[in-house]
Image 1 (cartoon, rainbow, N blue to C red):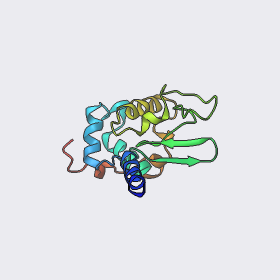
Image 2: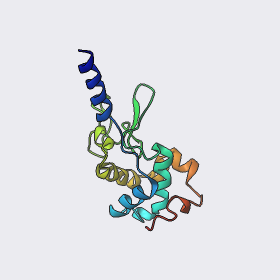
Image 3: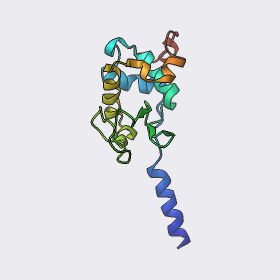
Image 4: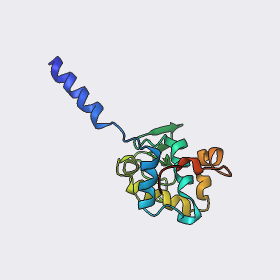
Length: 147
């Protein structure tokens, strides 16, 4: 019984492990998805944003009070952008469950980030971008990446 419990805990820890991107790997994925220059935003700004929001961790979630949780590599909020299945009657502007933002394949997270950027807030929807990337030289985030 003890061995089965240990095996179950091991499998549980394996199933929830996150993909943590290296900066250049993330930059290449973002470029492949057409994010370099999307809405005038440089690839370096996207990498800076994700680095400071999630440390490039696909499974990161953080709670801010009873109603607000942010999800995934871009730390996108259930308050406006996705459906957490728990918080009633909030908008779901990305049209997806919040769990879709936690996948190692970040295609859906990128699609939602595009919707966020198209909103009136643009990149200012992310406090980490304002604090760490806006009006800064962010070229260091993709230096030597070959992108």
